[in-house]
Length: 362
DNA sequence: AAGCCGGGGTC
DNA sequence: GACCCAGGCTT
Image 1 (tube, chains in turn cyan, brown, purple):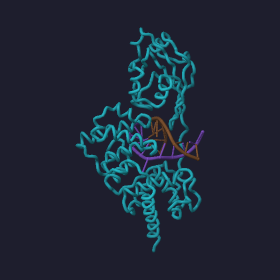
Image 2 (tube, rainbow, N blue to C red; image 1 turned 60 degrees about the vertical axis):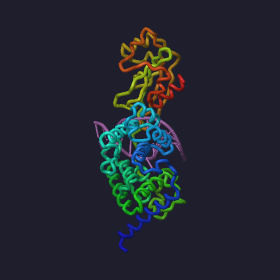
Image 3 (cartoon, rainbow, N blue to C red; image 1 turned 180 degrees about the vertical axis):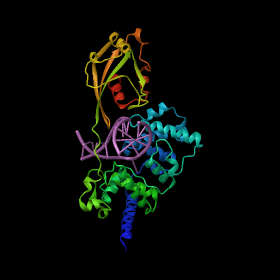
Image 4 (cartoon, rainbow, N blue to C red; image 1 turned 90 degrees about the horizontal axis):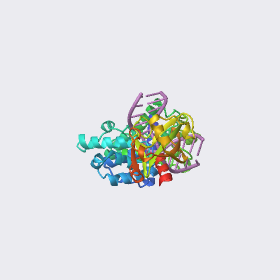
């Protein structure tokens, strides 16, 4: 036996062991009872950068609200965004809607059925294309997600920084070779991700009960805690949001966010962003038209403060409630509309805003 | 290649 | 507080 077939043997044992492990340890998840590409796709988009436990209730809600891709295509985008509210990365919801409409209107409702064609859809990248192609259509193409990077880096002792382009090619090539040894490509793809989620976890992997312990370079060399290698991200940026919450009786002024910024297409209040933290209304430099509302109005109580942590930003928000006199209700800045408290409940909003409304007006 | 885009769970 | 999650898009 030459060195190459020996290596292949090792890889085959790894692949077949994972598939066997999966049949015994897999969780019972709703999207594992279907091969309908619409449901598979929906679940995969929801699960992008999202834990199963967080995404599952959203999946149930989407499936019951939009039983077919046609239902989703027909849906109002605002309603879809509201259903997505709280899940984050809202471009996923907008892309979901676009792709649903594209498949319904341009492809006669027939979902693309190859990795190659799936990649062309909005919001479907290499991971999701591979997931749908293998789970729904049985195509032999490997998924490479965060779990796979971790499992492969440990198993094969790969030291490359997984954030680099070179490493992505290394892992993709290895994954492509491995899936050739799989008994069933869909099962293998599921198994390596499930294995990463349950057994080969980021911290405190359960190596002592690991079925491929003796094949794992990291375990055999005591490196499992420091693999995969991943470059540190830039520190989170601090942002200071001063929200003017214009109120008139039981109505509040809100607008849709349209800038190239966080929370696109979600609703919030009049916003002044400052470079430094502020604590008083009089320190804010406001446009004259807005200042008119402020000086003519009555500031209710002290501003509420709230901090929202994103993966890349720390938002420190202050909410100043301004009671606008009836005479000035037509002077709202462009884009703003009065909404009753009840109506604001129907608007898609960032969690920061939802929490604030709940706390102050709920 | 690097930056941007959420929110939540876990240690 | 740090890490990271069934990533993708834009520049």
